[in-house]
Length: 301
Image (cartoon, helix red, strand yellow):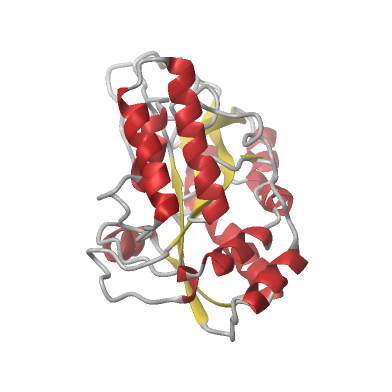
């Protein structure tokens, strides 16, 4: 193969149509509802693959350099914990057609420090506990802004289901699903997210530091996290940064996520699977890091 042509085709229906007619040889982000049509078409097929990305919610506790005057309901840990209890991960996996593995941590296999108590676990889904925590916190219908986007496979649909789950326990949610460019330019890059922020984060280096760095002091742009529990997480992160014993270091990084879960400052939802459609002419497999390295691809025509 001498030349590879990359095309940006934002519309899923257009990408699928191009694949079916042979105008392109590979498309990623193929939703489950299109699999049968692609597999029934002569010369095209679909293939699932596991990514390193974890779909998650990040909850703001306080102001930060980019939003110094922010104040909102999620500054109360009980509100954040209520959000966590309101989420049914099994339903979310159904929404994405099984393209996900539930997780309570960004540390997923084979990353050092991944924990079977966190991975492939749905967590505690307890809507009544969520309602009790809201009442205990004195929540009185204050609006929570929920920033999401169309960046990832079926993210819009998952966002809408999450909105329904949160509203079912009594939260007042303003869901804003933005297109990718608007989300990156207005929310992601300037760190302007408010109470709830949804995104998928990967770890192509398979090192736990990549997953915990957003909890490090000076990098809490999207959470404004502070207090004694944040200090405990910071101590573990710094100790793990210089620990050359892999067992001890893995335990330290895993312990960071124990604190994160208790504080509900980040709520991991599921490790993302994806699906690609390709023509029968293309011989190539998706690498574990999810990057489109095409050096070993063969096109038989």
